[in-house]
Figure 1 (cartoon, rainbow, N blue to C red):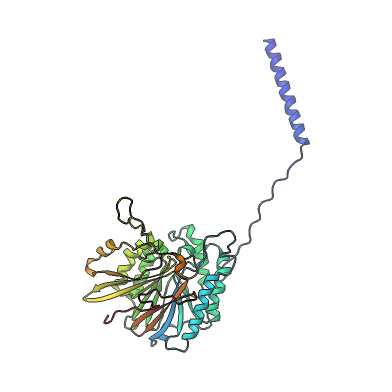
Figure 2 (cartoon, rainbow, N blue to C red):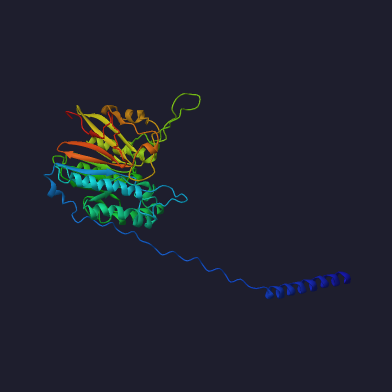
Length: 416
Protein backbone atom coordinates (compact mmCIF):
# COMPACT_ATOMS: atom_id res chain seq x y z
CA UNK A 1 0.00 0.00 0.00
CA UNK A 2 2.79 2.44 0.89
CA UNK A 3 4.61 1.68 -2.36
CA UNK A 4 1.41 2.26 -4.27
CA UNK A 5 0.85 5.58 -2.57
CA UNK A 6 4.44 6.66 -3.27
CA UNK A 7 4.12 5.58 -6.88
CA UNK A 8 0.84 7.44 -7.22
CA UNK A 9 2.34 10.50 -5.63
CA UNK A 10 5.29 10.40 -8.01
CA UNK A 11 2.96 10.16 -11.02
CA UNK A 12 0.86 13.04 -9.78
CA UNK A 13 3.98 15.11 -9.18
CA UNK A 14 5.33 14.38 -12.67
CA UNK A 15 1.96 15.28 -14.19
CA UNK A 16 1.91 18.61 -12.43
CA UNK A 17 5.48 19.34 -13.47
CA UNK A 18 4.74 18.46 -17.10
CA UNK A 19 1.63 20.65 -17.13
CA UNK A 20 3.60 23.54 -15.70
CA UNK A 21 6.31 23.03 -18.28
CA UNK A 22 3.70 22.96 -21.02
CA UNK A 23 2.19 26.21 -19.83
CA UNK A 24 5.60 27.84 -19.67
CA UNK A 25 6.46 26.60 -23.16
CA UNK A 26 3.18 27.86 -24.49
CA UNK A 27 3.81 31.23 -22.92
CA UNK A 28 7.14 31.42 -24.75
CA UNK A 29 5.62 30.64 -28.23
CA UNK A 30 4.69 33.61 -30.44
CA UNK A 31 0.95 34.15 -30.55
CA UNK A 32 -0.96 34.48 -33.89
CA UNK A 33 -3.67 37.14 -33.84
CA UNK A 34 -7.11 35.94 -34.94
CA UNK A 35 -7.85 36.42 -38.62
CA UNK A 36 -9.84 39.51 -39.46
CA UNK A 37 -13.36 38.75 -40.68
CA UNK A 38 -13.82 38.88 -44.42
CA UNK A 39 -15.19 42.24 -45.53
CA UNK A 40 -18.86 42.29 -46.42
CA UNK A 41 -19.16 43.30 -50.08
CA UNK A 42 -20.98 46.52 -50.72
CA UNK A 43 -24.62 45.99 -51.61
CA UNK A 44 -25.46 46.81 -55.22
CA UNK A 45 -29.00 47.55 -56.25
CA UNK A 46 -30.52 47.10 -59.68
CA UNK A 47 -30.94 50.31 -61.64
CA UNK A 48 -34.40 50.69 -63.22
CA UNK A 49 -34.23 50.86 -67.00
CA UNK A 50 -35.22 54.31 -68.19
CA UNK A 51 -38.51 54.50 -70.07
CA UNK A 52 -38.83 56.01 -73.53
CA UNK A 53 -39.66 59.70 -73.76
CA UNK A 54 -42.83 58.73 -75.62
CA UNK A 55 -44.41 55.66 -74.00
CA UNK A 56 -47.32 53.79 -75.51
CA UNK A 57 -50.46 55.94 -75.33
CA UNK A 58 -53.37 54.93 -73.08
CA UNK A 59 -55.37 52.06 -74.53
CA UNK A 60 -58.32 54.18 -75.55
CA UNK A 61 -56.11 56.65 -77.45
CA UNK A 62 -54.89 54.04 -79.97
CA UNK A 63 -58.21 52.28 -80.62
CA UNK A 64 -58.28 53.27 -84.31
CA UNK A 65 -54.77 51.94 -85.10
CA UNK A 66 -54.80 48.79 -87.25
CA UNK A 67 -51.40 48.87 -88.98
CA UNK A 68 -48.03 48.74 -87.21
CA UNK A 69 -45.11 46.44 -86.38
CA UNK A 70 -43.39 45.19 -83.26
CA UNK A 71 -40.26 43.17 -82.49
CA UNK A 72 -40.16 39.84 -80.67
CA UNK A 73 -37.06 38.11 -79.30
CA UNK A 74 -35.60 36.54 -76.16
CA UNK A 75 -32.68 34.87 -74.36
CA UNK A 76 -30.23 37.75 -74.24
CA UNK A 77 -28.09 36.32 -71.44
CA UNK A 78 -24.46 35.27 -71.66
CA UNK A 79 -23.26 31.70 -71.34
CA UNK A 80 -21.72 29.76 -68.46
CA UNK A 81 -18.54 31.52 -67.27
CA UNK A 82 -15.38 30.23 -68.95
CA UNK A 83 -11.70 31.15 -68.50
CA UNK A 84 -10.79 34.12 -70.62
CA UNK A 85 -14.38 34.84 -71.67
CA UNK A 86 -16.14 37.84 -70.17
CA UNK A 87 -19.86 37.51 -69.63
CA UNK A 88 -22.79 39.12 -67.84
CA UNK A 89 -21.73 41.41 -65.02
CA UNK A 90 -18.37 42.16 -66.65
CA UNK A 91 -19.01 43.57 -70.14
CA UNK A 92 -21.88 44.91 -72.21
CA UNK A 93 -23.15 41.78 -73.95
CA UNK A 94 -21.65 41.86 -77.48
CA UNK A 95 -24.10 39.51 -79.25
CA UNK A 96 -27.14 41.16 -77.71
CA UNK A 97 -25.68 44.51 -78.77
CA UNK A 98 -25.49 43.30 -82.39
CA UNK A 99 -29.11 42.19 -82.27
CA UNK A 100 -30.20 45.60 -80.99
CA UNK A 101 -28.07 47.30 -83.67
CA UNK A 102 -30.15 45.50 -86.29
CA UNK A 103 -33.37 46.28 -84.44
CA UNK A 104 -32.63 50.00 -84.43
CA UNK A 105 -31.67 49.95 -88.12
CA UNK A 106 -34.85 48.05 -88.97
CA UNK A 107 -37.00 50.42 -86.91
CA UNK A 108 -35.43 53.35 -88.75
CA UNK A 109 -36.26 51.75 -92.10
CA UNK A 110 -39.89 51.14 -91.07
CA UNK A 111 -40.47 54.56 -89.52
CA UNK A 112 -41.75 56.16 -92.72
CA UNK A 113 -43.83 53.13 -93.81
CA UNK A 114 -47.44 52.26 -92.85
CA UNK A 115 -45.95 49.74 -90.36
CA UNK A 116 -43.72 51.65 -87.90
CA UNK A 117 -42.28 49.72 -84.94
CA UNK A 118 -44.27 50.55 -81.81
CA UNK A 119 -42.75 48.28 -79.15
CA UNK A 120 -40.56 45.25 -78.33
CA UNK A 121 -41.66 42.02 -76.61
CA UNK A 122 -38.87 40.07 -74.87
CA UNK A 123 -39.62 36.47 -73.85
CA UNK A 124 -37.18 36.14 -70.93
CA UNK A 125 -33.65 35.32 -69.74
CA UNK A 126 -32.32 38.86 -69.72
CA UNK A 127 -29.16 37.85 -67.86
CA UNK A 128 -27.33 34.73 -66.71
CA UNK A 129 -28.20 35.14 -63.02
CA UNK A 130 -31.01 37.49 -62.08
CA UNK A 131 -29.88 37.45 -58.44
CA UNK A 132 -26.75 39.37 -59.48
CA UNK A 133 -27.57 43.06 -59.83
CA UNK A 134 -24.36 43.82 -61.73
CA UNK A 135 -25.47 41.55 -64.55
CA UNK A 136 -28.46 43.80 -65.17
CA UNK A 137 -26.64 47.08 -64.58
CA UNK A 138 -23.52 46.36 -66.63
CA UNK A 139 -24.53 43.90 -69.33
CA UNK A 140 -28.25 44.39 -70.04
CA UNK A 141 -29.59 47.81 -69.10
CA UNK A 142 -27.22 49.89 -71.29
CA UNK A 143 -28.36 47.89 -74.32
CA UNK A 144 -32.07 48.23 -73.58
CA UNK A 145 -31.74 51.96 -72.97
CA UNK A 146 -30.43 52.28 -76.52
CA UNK A 147 -33.92 51.12 -77.52
CA UNK A 148 -35.95 52.98 -74.94
CA UNK A 149 -34.01 56.24 -74.56
CA UNK A 150 -32.07 56.25 -77.80
CA UNK A 151 -34.65 54.95 -80.30
CA UNK A 152 -37.70 55.89 -78.17
CA UNK A 153 -39.20 52.38 -78.44
CA UNK A 154 -41.23 50.93 -75.51
CA UNK A 155 -39.88 47.62 -74.19
CA UNK A 156 -41.88 44.88 -72.46
CA UNK A 157 -40.38 41.85 -70.72
CA UNK A 158 -41.54 38.47 -69.44
CA UNK A 159 -39.56 36.45 -66.89
CA UNK A 160 -37.19 33.63 -67.82
CA UNK A 161 -35.79 30.89 -65.60
CA UNK A 162 -32.37 32.60 -65.46
CA UNK A 163 -34.03 35.81 -64.26
CA UNK A 164 -36.17 34.54 -61.39
CA UNK A 165 -35.68 30.77 -61.14
CA UNK A 166 -38.40 28.14 -61.19
CA UNK A 167 -39.29 28.03 -57.48
CA UNK A 168 -42.94 28.73 -56.58
CA UNK A 169 -44.21 32.15 -55.43
CA UNK A 170 -43.07 32.97 -51.90
CA UNK A 171 -40.03 30.69 -52.03
CA UNK A 172 -36.83 32.47 -50.86
CA UNK A 173 -35.00 31.05 -53.86
CA UNK A 174 -37.24 33.08 -56.16
CA UNK A 175 -37.47 36.32 -54.24
CA UNK A 176 -34.11 37.96 -55.03
CA UNK A 177 -34.26 37.31 -58.77
CA UNK A 178 -37.88 38.45 -58.91
CA UNK A 179 -37.07 41.60 -56.94
CA UNK A 180 -34.16 42.46 -59.25
CA UNK A 181 -36.15 41.79 -62.40
CA UNK A 182 -39.16 43.77 -61.22
CA UNK A 183 -36.87 46.65 -60.27
CA UNK A 184 -35.15 46.64 -63.65
CA UNK A 185 -38.50 46.71 -65.46
CA UNK A 186 -40.35 48.98 -63.02
CA UNK A 187 -40.45 52.00 -65.36
CA UNK A 188 -41.41 49.97 -68.43
CA UNK A 189 -44.42 47.87 -67.39
CA UNK A 190 -47.85 48.79 -65.95
CA UNK A 191 -47.49 49.86 -62.30
CA UNK A 192 -48.78 47.99 -59.26
CA UNK A 193 -52.48 48.67 -58.79
CA UNK A 194 -53.12 48.92 -62.53
CA UNK A 195 -56.06 46.86 -63.86
CA UNK A 196 -53.57 45.49 -66.41
CA UNK A 197 -51.10 44.25 -63.79
CA UNK A 198 -51.14 41.29 -61.39
CA UNK A 199 -49.69 42.78 -58.21
CA UNK A 200 -46.46 41.17 -57.01
CA UNK A 201 -45.94 39.34 -60.30
CA UNK A 202 -44.24 40.07 -63.59
CA UNK A 203 -47.60 39.32 -65.20
CA UNK A 204 -49.40 42.11 -67.03
CA UNK A 205 -51.16 43.14 -70.24
CA UNK A 206 -50.92 46.00 -72.70
CA UNK A 207 -53.32 47.10 -75.39
CA UNK A 208 -52.30 48.94 -78.51
CA UNK A 209 -54.39 49.44 -81.63
CA UNK A 210 -56.24 46.24 -82.46
CA UNK A 211 -53.76 44.01 -80.60
CA UNK A 212 -53.74 42.89 -76.96
CA UNK A 213 -50.50 41.53 -75.45
CA UNK A 214 -50.22 39.49 -72.24
CA UNK A 215 -46.95 38.73 -70.41
CA UNK A 216 -46.99 35.48 -68.39
CA UNK A 217 -44.35 34.23 -65.95
CA UNK A 218 -44.10 30.67 -67.28
CA UNK A 219 -41.67 29.70 -64.51
CA UNK A 220 -44.80 29.44 -62.34
CA UNK A 221 -47.17 28.22 -65.04
CA UNK A 222 -49.01 26.06 -62.48
CA UNK A 223 -49.72 29.02 -60.19
CA UNK A 224 -53.52 29.33 -59.81
CA UNK A 225 -53.44 33.07 -59.00
CA UNK A 226 -51.70 33.90 -62.26
CA UNK A 227 -53.96 31.56 -64.25
CA UNK A 228 -57.06 33.16 -62.72
CA UNK A 229 -55.83 36.66 -63.55
CA UNK A 230 -55.03 35.78 -67.17
CA UNK A 231 -58.40 34.07 -67.54
CA UNK A 232 -60.16 37.17 -66.24
CA UNK A 233 -58.26 39.41 -68.67
CA UNK A 234 -59.33 37.24 -71.60
CA UNK A 235 -62.92 36.82 -70.53
CA UNK A 236 -63.43 40.57 -70.11
CA UNK A 237 -61.61 41.58 -73.28
CA UNK A 238 -63.33 43.69 -75.92
CA UNK A 239 -62.99 41.40 -78.93
CA UNK A 240 -64.76 43.85 -81.19
CA UNK A 241 -61.68 46.05 -80.81
CA UNK A 242 -58.89 43.56 -80.13
CA UNK A 243 -58.67 41.35 -83.22
CA UNK A 244 -55.27 39.95 -82.23
CA UNK A 245 -54.27 38.41 -78.89
CA UNK A 246 -50.53 37.85 -78.47
CA UNK A 247 -49.10 36.15 -75.39
CA UNK A 248 -45.37 36.24 -74.64
CA UNK A 249 -43.59 34.05 -72.11
CA UNK A 250 -40.44 31.98 -71.75
CA UNK A 251 -41.20 28.23 -71.91
CA UNK A 252 -42.83 27.18 -75.20
CA UNK A 253 -45.55 24.52 -75.19
CA UNK A 254 -43.40 22.55 -77.63
CA UNK A 255 -40.27 22.99 -79.73
CA UNK A 256 -37.62 20.91 -81.51
CA UNK A 257 -34.67 22.21 -79.49
CA UNK A 258 -32.98 20.80 -76.36
CA UNK A 259 -35.69 22.02 -73.97
CA UNK A 260 -38.43 20.17 -75.86
CA UNK A 261 -37.53 16.98 -74.03
CA UNK A 262 -37.23 15.11 -77.31
CA UNK A 263 -34.55 12.49 -77.71
CA UNK A 264 -32.53 12.39 -80.90
CA UNK A 265 -31.47 8.80 -80.26
CA UNK A 266 -33.63 5.66 -80.28
CA UNK A 267 -33.98 3.40 -77.28
CA UNK A 268 -31.11 0.90 -77.60
CA UNK A 269 -32.20 -2.25 -79.37
CA UNK A 270 -35.67 -0.98 -80.26
CA UNK A 271 -35.25 1.43 -83.15
CA UNK A 272 -37.84 3.69 -81.50
CA UNK A 273 -37.24 7.21 -80.23
CA UNK A 274 -36.93 7.52 -76.47
CA UNK A 275 -39.91 9.12 -74.69
CA UNK A 276 -39.89 12.90 -74.41
CA UNK A 277 -38.84 14.38 -71.09
CA UNK A 278 -40.89 17.56 -71.21
CA UNK A 279 -40.09 20.23 -68.62
CA UNK A 280 -42.73 20.83 -65.96
CA UNK A 281 -43.33 24.39 -67.13
CA UNK A 282 -44.16 23.27 -70.69
CA UNK A 283 -46.39 20.53 -69.32
CA UNK A 284 -48.35 23.15 -67.37
CA UNK A 285 -48.56 25.45 -70.40
CA UNK A 286 -49.99 22.58 -72.44
CA UNK A 287 -52.47 21.49 -69.79
CA UNK A 288 -53.63 24.84 -68.37
CA UNK A 289 -52.98 27.61 -70.86
CA UNK A 290 -53.34 26.09 -74.32
CA UNK A 291 -57.02 25.16 -73.76
CA UNK A 292 -57.58 28.71 -72.48
CA UNK A 293 -55.83 30.15 -75.54
CA UNK A 294 -57.94 28.04 -77.87
CA UNK A 295 -61.13 29.04 -76.08
CA UNK A 296 -60.35 32.73 -76.58
CA UNK A 297 -58.77 32.37 -80.02
CA UNK A 298 -55.30 33.61 -79.09
CA UNK A 299 -53.41 34.00 -82.36
CA UNK A 300 -49.70 34.21 -81.53
CA UNK A 301 -47.32 32.99 -78.81
CA UNK A 302 -43.88 34.63 -78.63
CA UNK A 303 -41.59 32.35 -76.59
CA UNK A 304 -37.92 31.48 -76.09
CA UNK A 305 -35.94 29.16 -73.79
CA UNK A 306 -34.46 27.25 -76.74
CA UNK A 307 -31.71 29.41 -78.25
CA UNK A 308 -32.75 29.10 -81.87
CA UNK A 309 -35.60 30.00 -84.20
CA UNK A 310 -38.52 27.56 -84.43
CA UNK A 311 -42.12 27.88 -85.58
CA UNK A 312 -45.18 25.67 -85.09
CA UNK A 313 -48.82 26.17 -86.10
CA UNK A 314 -51.61 24.58 -84.08
CA UNK A 315 -54.93 24.43 -85.94
CA UNK A 316 -58.15 23.50 -84.17
CA UNK A 317 -61.90 23.58 -84.70
CA UNK A 318 -64.38 25.59 -82.66
CA UNK A 319 -68.10 25.62 -83.56
CA UNK A 320 -67.42 24.65 -87.14
CA UNK A 321 -64.66 27.22 -87.72
CA UNK A 322 -60.94 26.45 -88.01
CA UNK A 323 -58.55 28.70 -86.08
CA UNK A 324 -54.78 28.73 -85.68
CA UNK A 325 -52.24 29.53 -82.97
CA UNK A 326 -48.70 30.29 -84.14
CA UNK A 327 -45.98 29.45 -81.61
CA UNK A 328 -42.76 31.29 -82.43
CA UNK A 329 -39.64 30.28 -80.49
CA UNK A 330 -37.26 33.21 -80.89
CA UNK A 331 -34.42 32.56 -78.43
CA UNK A 332 -31.64 34.13 -80.47
CA UNK A 333 -31.09 37.34 -78.55
CA UNK A 334 -27.47 36.67 -77.58
CA UNK A 335 -27.34 33.46 -75.52
CA UNK A 336 -25.21 30.50 -76.69
CA UNK A 337 -26.97 29.04 -79.71
CA UNK A 338 -28.64 25.62 -79.76
CA UNK A 339 -29.28 23.09 -82.51
CA UNK A 340 -32.17 20.87 -83.56
CA UNK A 341 -32.73 17.82 -81.33
CA UNK A 342 -35.89 16.14 -82.59
CA UNK A 343 -39.59 16.42 -83.16
CA UNK A 344 -41.74 16.69 -80.02
CA UNK A 345 -44.12 13.81 -79.32
CA UNK A 346 -47.52 15.54 -79.20
CA UNK A 347 -49.82 12.54 -79.51
CA UNK A 348 -51.03 12.63 -75.90
CA UNK A 349 -51.48 16.41 -76.07
CA UNK A 350 -53.63 16.13 -79.18
CA UNK A 351 -55.61 13.18 -77.84
CA UNK A 352 -56.53 15.13 -74.69
CA UNK A 353 -58.83 17.43 -76.72
CA UNK A 354 -60.55 15.22 -79.32
CA UNK A 355 -63.48 17.57 -79.90
CA UNK A 356 -61.16 20.34 -81.10
CA UNK A 357 -59.51 18.19 -83.79
CA UNK A 358 -56.04 19.63 -83.12
CA UNK A 359 -53.51 19.47 -85.97
CA UNK A 360 -49.94 20.68 -85.49
CA UNK A 361 -47.63 21.69 -88.31
CA UNK A 362 -43.91 22.31 -87.90
CA UNK A 363 -43.37 25.15 -90.37
CA UNK A 364 -39.57 25.11 -90.39
CA UNK A 365 -36.81 22.94 -88.96
CA UNK A 366 -33.88 24.58 -87.16
CA UNK A 367 -30.37 23.64 -88.25
CA UNK A 368 -28.63 20.78 -86.50
CA UNK A 369 -25.86 22.86 -84.93
CA UNK A 370 -25.98 26.08 -82.99
CA UNK A 371 -23.39 27.68 -85.27
CA UNK A 372 -25.88 27.43 -88.13
CA UNK A 373 -28.74 29.02 -86.15
CA UNK A 374 -27.95 32.75 -86.05
CA UNK A 375 -28.78 35.27 -83.38
CA UNK A 376 -31.91 37.02 -84.53
CA UNK A 377 -35.19 38.77 -83.79
CA UNK A 378 -38.63 38.71 -85.41
CA UNK A 379 -40.62 41.56 -86.91
CA UNK A 380 -44.36 40.99 -86.47
CA UNK A 381 -46.49 43.06 -88.82
CA UNK A 382 -50.09 43.87 -87.90
CA UNK A 383 -52.13 44.66 -90.99
CA UNK A 384 -55.80 44.90 -90.10
CA UNK A 385 -57.07 41.38 -89.45
CA UNK A 386 -53.83 39.70 -90.51
CA UNK A 387 -50.40 39.12 -89.03
CA UNK A 388 -47.12 38.26 -90.72
CA UNK A 389 -43.58 37.61 -89.52
CA UNK A 390 -40.09 38.32 -90.80
CA UNK A 391 -36.98 36.81 -89.20
CA UNK A 392 -33.86 39.00 -89.23
CA UNK A 393 -30.49 37.53 -88.28
CA UNK A 394 -27.26 39.28 -87.35
CA UNK A 395 -25.11 37.41 -89.85
CA UNK A 396 -23.67 38.83 -93.05
CA UNK A 397 -26.19 36.94 -95.20
CA UNK A 398 -30.00 37.07 -94.80
CA UNK A 399 -31.52 34.44 -92.53
CA UNK A 400 -34.08 32.51 -94.60
CA UNK A 401 -35.38 29.59 -92.54
CA UNK A 402 -38.71 29.05 -94.30
CA UNK A 403 -39.42 26.77 -97.24
CA UNK A 404 -38.17 28.15 -100.52
CA UNK A 405 -35.49 30.29 -98.87
CA UNK A 406 -37.80 32.92 -97.41
CA UNK A 407 -37.48 35.02 -94.28
CA UNK A 408 -41.12 36.16 -94.26
CA UNK A 409 -44.32 34.21 -93.70
CA UNK A 410 -48.04 34.92 -93.21
CA UNK A 411 -49.50 34.07 -89.80
CA UNK A 412 -53.00 33.51 -91.09
CA UNK A 413 -54.84 31.08 -93.33
CA UNK A 414 -56.87 32.34 -96.25
CA UNK A 415 -60.50 32.51 -95.25
CA UNK A 416 -59.79 32.14 -91.53
